[in-house]
Amino acid sequence: MMSLEKEIGEFIASLASEKGYSAHTCRAYKKNLEEFRAYIEGTMGGGKAAGKRTENEPASLDQVDALTIRGYLGYLHKRNKKSTIARKLSALRSFFKFLLKRGKLPESPAALILTPKQDQSIPVYLPVDDMFRLLDAVDTGTLLGLRNRALFETLYSAGIRVSELTGLDTEDVDLTGRTVRVTGKGSRERMVPIGRKAAEAVRSYRERLKKEKGIGVEEDGALFRNHRGGRLTPRSVARILEKIARQIGIVIPVSPHSLRHSFATHMLDSGADLRVVQELLGHKSLSTTQKYTHVSIDRLMETYDKAHPRK
Image 1 (tube, rainbow, N blue to C red):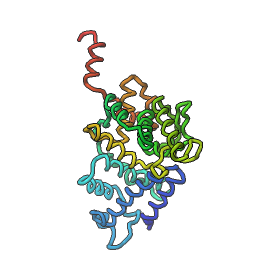
Image 2: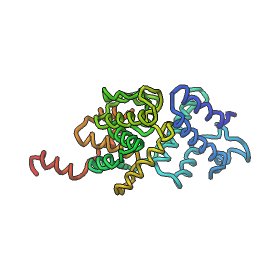
Image 3: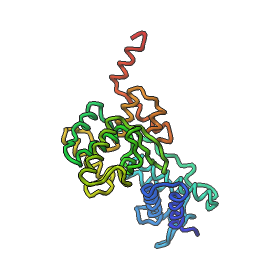
Image 4: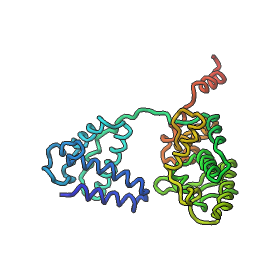
């Protein structure tokens, strides 16, 4: 009898050692799979794998079949969004694929289970005027103000993820060449250009940081630092951004990811090639980038009126 807990542990270890997944991604996979194990053991609303196990018996791999997974998805459907269910099912598929490759399963019990059809959601983004208004609203009279301006100029200019932003070290940035080296998902590196305003904002912040704290750009470590000199966290960046957005009266929920959405939307609206934007965003699949191709009805009508011969 193969312990489900042991097999999950080996799978999570392989994500880090073989695929180079980040600690955050590994934790997410583990959480999803441990929830499935808890369902089978009857400790998370489940029915003890349809009567296949006795009280206090640890869950084993031979208790899992397609019917068990369907029951689990039915349980999730009552309290989760379709996107969440799809993510949890994806984790199960990856887990069973891992076991299949190692000869521990003859076939995957999740192979024939369909992913729930997703609701199409348009990413939250800011119009260009609001984006500029937000950036210009950051007070640059203090060291932290200069840092905040540099943070959001870089986030919007490069279109990077907030985790990529806070992970930047001084050696990753070439302010003269206006490029940043970003480590994205799966530890994949890419070079991303940044605009002059972003480069100037970073330079101003680091010059002030050296003047006040004695920390120069030649020193190793985090590019953006908190008030104690340590590395900023993504949550801290989100809180700072939310506060500034409230202060200038932006009513839609604004997050660091909104700036990434804004970057992609504004680039595509201005005529940038979809595959170039895919490369800049660090997307593996073009279909992921295509969700940013939404345009306003006004722009559609304007293009139609200019282009169609019989209006």
